[in-house]
Image (cartoon, rainbow, N blue to C red; front, side, top):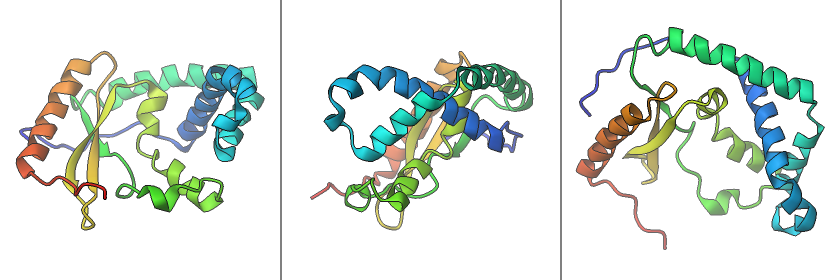
Amino acid sequence: CGHSIVPVPVVETTEMRSLHRALMRTETAAVHRAMMSSHPALYELSVRKFITGGEGILAVDYVDALRLRAVMQAEARQLTYAHCDVLLTPTTRSPALRYDAIADTSRAETWAQVTGLAHFTQPASYLGLPAISVPFTLSPDGLPLGVQLIAPAEREATLLSAALDFERHWTDLAAFPPLAG
């Protein structure tokens, strides 16, 4: 795609994932509170459980997650983005899941599969970095495989330029998945 690939150190810790969950669950609970109260049937049980779990997170834990995010953002600027313009990572751990295989999110193993898809996107989300997933190739089963591009804060133009290069690569392959039937 016209870019050089160089290995770079990244800021990622086990703690980061739990901090991300604290922010995401708290903010999701705040955003959906009124709708869940007036129309709970619009939410599947597993989603309701996830959202209401955010109501139990302590304010001090939420503020700590925000404070530590600022520290990790500065670390990412110094550690990772001193060596590259855009970070390239997988988007997911596996090819896309077919809907019929994950439709019942009340099953614990299905919920784990669905939430596991966010493994590689959580660090950028937690750090508040601009990121985009673009298709790159097809799996042996004909499902799209994507790559995630992550830029430093306030570098959206750089991110979108790189994404366009990857999109051109995808288009040049002419390897589009078959239409759902």
